[in-house]
Image (cartoon, rainbow, N blue to C red; front, side, top):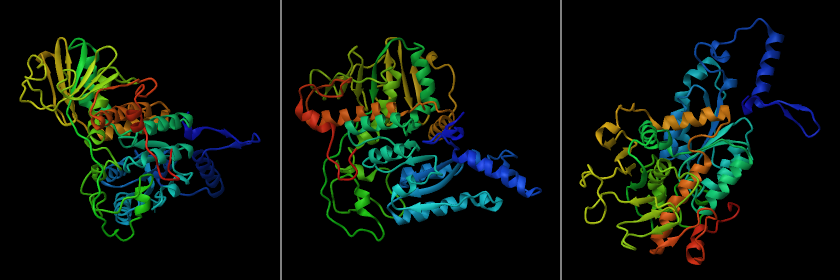
Length: 459
């Protein structure tokens, strides 16, 4: 029985039905009172269609470049109905509404289209009890507050990565999701990528022996910026765009009006995001953790390049396992695995797993190489990894199991990326306690685990 079919009890013991049960009961009563009448087969879920009462109703919060991608994909899913979106930019609200109107044209003709609303303030969307789940594709500055409020409102959640702006926020989000029993999927789609699924199976089956080393492509972090003030575009709610972050004047480099020009433009300013380490490398760290079987834990030592003999930024675990940041392996710095060509770059969204009997290099767009060659004995089918990630989430909403990129996975991988930022910001080796999630006795580093937020958005 899914959460949508649960019979609930009120405070005085009265029977309460879910929205979907009420819809079905109302339809049955109406049918009994008005027989005979003609009901389109699509309404009944026939002819391969999904009946409206069985569709997962979704609201989309944030429709920038990533949000637009999610929004367009969700219009294709027969078992989903988008009911609302929220964005502080009126151009984006209007454009996405037009996209949905075109996509749902057939549903309008069949009489099963329930209408659509666009809001500037996401809280209006969360207040609707006819919405089952939300997609959060704002900048990470907003992820924690929206997630906590969505969980409190009983919504299931799909949240883009990194899930938070700080380590402490990631932990708060995980606690809120568990407290309210939400199904939470992080936008770490490599967990559902066919290439990565096959790589993990090969690694965990021991095809390259014991694996205690993973290379991930290198990345940097952003500084604080002070771009000059520019006129706020008409209709843009700049205060709401900033949300929990310190006030900065509007500048187009943070937010492009009209069609988005960049996936994460705000990440150029450390006030809003940390740069490539959290916006891109978080994917690689997540995959490295899965392959190394380190989910739920973390490194115990973080070492910058050139310190203690480490050739580049390195995470070291209690059992000696290492994650090394290096886009290209340099023979005079890095140990080169047998069969690896040093001229080959580690792919941007890739990981090189090195075992004591070989290696596997995997990347989300189809690169899957290995040594010895017989390790890879079957060609992997290529599919759309974001669609696979969506489908995992939607299936889990019905079954109430945890998705592959559950909130704990999202928190763990996001925290890893924040640790990379902190060691680069401090520029020195750090000792990390992955259980307490603190730097023992290091006040400077611990101060970077959280940051103040503007009211009322502190979580």
